[in-house]
Length: 210
Image 1 (cartoon, one colour):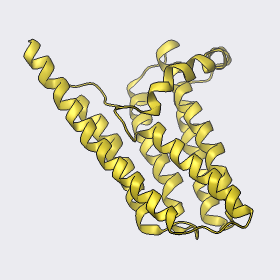
Image 2 (cartoon, rainbow, N blue to C red; image 1 turned 180 degrees about the horizontal axis):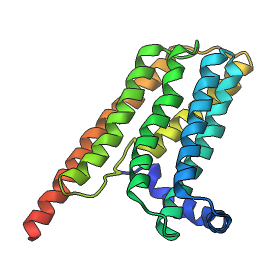
Image 3 (spheres, rainbow, N blue to C red; image 1 turned 90 degrees about the horizontal axis):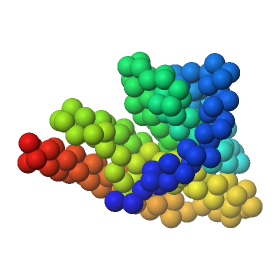
């Protein structure tokens, strides 16, 4: 199923010279992972502290930076001999903690309906844990779409940019924000089902070939 995650190799290619420079400077994958989580908490705190519409423009900037850091930590780990069990734990937990820290505060922001925001944030955790469960049953870590981590980041970045610009110009929000969030929730639930199905199919294929 198509997902923005499929663009990751091209994105990594653009970042590779910078990653090499970081490795030469002594930066570690775990440091980068923790930095991405701290950025998410900082943005979440800003969303809580500031009800002004302009603060929503932090979302596209922070989410792009976070996705870059997530790609960088993986490249440092794989390509520069920094893979570790601690890193694997930080990577998986960091993703879901950062998602919750950045998206959940939107439930208290005046432009967003609380219920769908909370449900999307909770479902984001379920989506990523479903991908991890694949490993437990003998499949690979599943990244199937249509609404994985990268897709969520793109959707919320676009929403933050759109609302920050339109509302900053005096264009009012409306029910469409809620309807869009419900669509994102439906896409998240579809992703949970798709990842579980693909993991089971992968295991069945291995058993059939054995």
